[in-house]
Image (cartoon, rainbow, N blue to C red; front, side):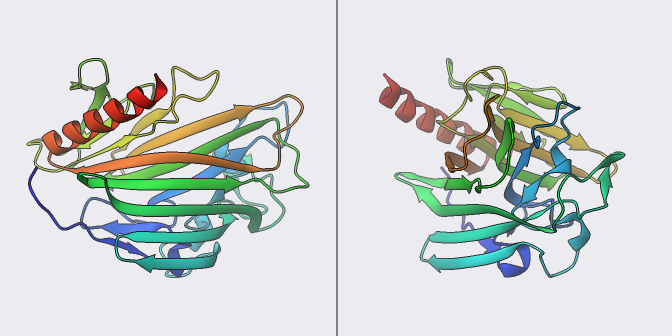
Length: 275
């Protein structure tokens, strides 16, 4: 693998979300970051719309392109190649706002949902891999029957126009159409020549009952941005338990071949553990 320096930029103005990683990310507002978010149904039997009750790490839609976040960074520590942070997440929509004509279901701008994360650059011998340990804390006093945890999402420049899936059975990549939406294989985005790429993998996929989903891809031509995500879901007719929901996610960066090798190594390690 070629050697490159990897730099992350974060801070309290982004609620602890990562807003720059060399030039692999396209930060436009407090939604388009490398960050985490969650969505809940408020136990309603109407159409589920993720943004209507949507605690978001980096802040709210109203924060726009500003340097301040409605999310509250409760703790933050960075040393060497590791970052620890806990964030009280803002709702994406403020009370009275709507998304695609669907009104916000929250009555406050700041949620009681916490996000705790540990981020480490490098994993064992894989210098091109970033390890994320992400914990969503669902508070007492709320009633939901469906939870959607976007453990990690990344918004990237439109130059990362090639979408791929990693096939664990062969260790190879296969071209992926624009979708949009989720499918079950780790996704990789690359430039046309393959000299820059980013891919995502989680040993915790898939969620129970959702084996055909988990890794999403989206292209937004008007905004000149592309998005990938790693999503987990919990459904319980009796109610989503107020507790911690923890997920482990790995992001690989480098050339397209660097990323393929990293995903193959990660899959080999965790598949062996599962045997």
